[in-house]
Amino acid sequence: MTIKIEKKIVSYNLVTEEDKAKVRAEEVKAQEISNIIPLGEPLGRPEKLVGNTYKIKTPVTEHALYITINDIVMHEGTPQEHRRPFEVFINSKNMEHFQWIVALTRVMSAVFRKGGDVTFLVEELKSVFEPSGGYFKKGGKFVPSLVAEIGEVVEQHLQEIGMLKKQGLDEHQQKLIDEKKAEYLEKHAKSGEEMNDEGFPKGAQLCKKCNTKASIIMDGCLTCLNCGESKCG
Image (tube, rainbow, N blue to C red; front, top):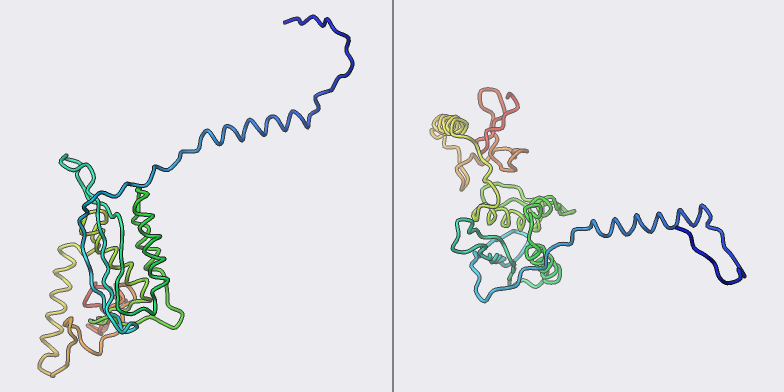
């Protein structure tokens, strides 16, 4: 295309390589912005929600904690109907942990309302360790922190509504463990060995796999009567 210049040229400017690079950088930046996929808007709260309340009593708090997780029903009345967590509340008479518990529940509720895969919260919470050491729950299960126990409650709830698959042993493994446990109890019941509330020997060691005091020496091997973990394979 030819352009005829009718006026007198009074100045001019050359396009340098630096100018070309700057233009290319702006074009790339504009392309990157156009490729960003924005997250959906947070779900609006309906007037009615369904949910469950869980009670946890720990040796590190004087009063019990009550954890309520409310769910929103998605695609109600269709074959795709399912529940997903929408908000969480934690209530207790103990005000010692009030600030961080309120902060935690607000952040968790915000994540729930954003949608998408929220199951990552379980591992994030359960991996929190108390610097001064954790504690043992009733039955001999070790919990690394109060936050981790909240994570266990969230895991339990997600399993109940179908967002997480329950982890467990298959039928044959469970049968073998039940047989081993019955064999051990039969041998030691006569000796008057005491059992804890979960039916495991009081002198059992902590299993590193399931964090439960259920590992005993059986047939020369350290074997867990809860999950079947054995150092002898």
